[in-house]
Amino acid sequence: MTTEELKQILQKNGSSNYWVQRAVASLAEECGISVADLPLDSSLDVKLSVLDQLSGQLDSMLEHYNLTSQTKEASEARFLMLNDDVLKNAVNVYNNGVQDLSETDAATRAYYKIRAMSGQMSKACAITNALRNLKKEDAKNQLLYQLAMDNSIKSDAYQVAGISDVMAEWKHGKAERYARAVTMAESLKMMQDTEKIKEKLRGYIDRVDMGSEPENEFMRHEITKTYKKNTFIAKALEEMSHAEMTTLFGSDADVQSNNDNAE
Image 1 (tube, rainbow, N blue to C red):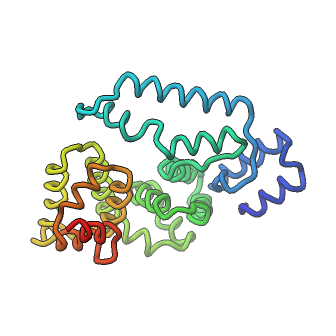
Image 2: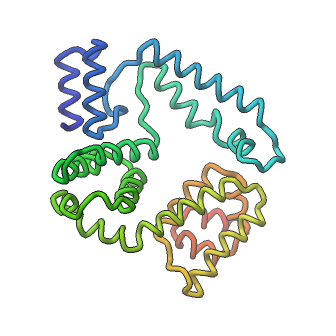
Image 3: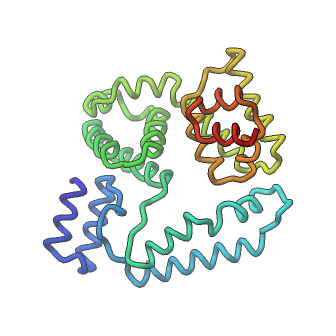
């Protein structure tokens, strides 16, 4: 089913009907459709759950917040808990909106739906639906990565889904480059020393320049996402040279112009 079909069901059967909404939400999940695209209401249970989650994050922040500690818990308390995205999501859900799943959750849910299908043709239909309904490129990339790492899904399924060439690219190098980019971005998030951040980034640049590692098409996007939410990484990037920034982001990147202004 498509998003528009589910919207029609809600419109004709009453969007305020709890049981209709549950059925539509279930259909959306089965089809890999983002529930954020549907006019669904939030139940009292959902609202109470939102408050519980916020309270839990606040308790964790009070317990682990530390400006100097480099532990995972301290980093999460400073950068992940009760940040703008978390609070915006809470408001949307509490005020009768349904916030989309995170990119990671949306792609993972789609992947396990595909794996749950009994035959290769059923898997092909699920793959087609997932790639059609996942809106964000990040979510699609993560799904393709998970599929590329799963040898239980046969080539027949990819052929019927029309992505044989795409999966060949992912299985023969693209998945590895994606994993490296994500791993580097995640490691940078945990660093609070700008010199160490620059050292790690320059290590990648040197490996590319020497030919020991291919240029990674995912690296620019992953690091861009990371620095926009992390002041330590943003500061480190501002202190890097023009040539280094061009290797990382290209001449058209926003962070490049920021670095030029700083100089």
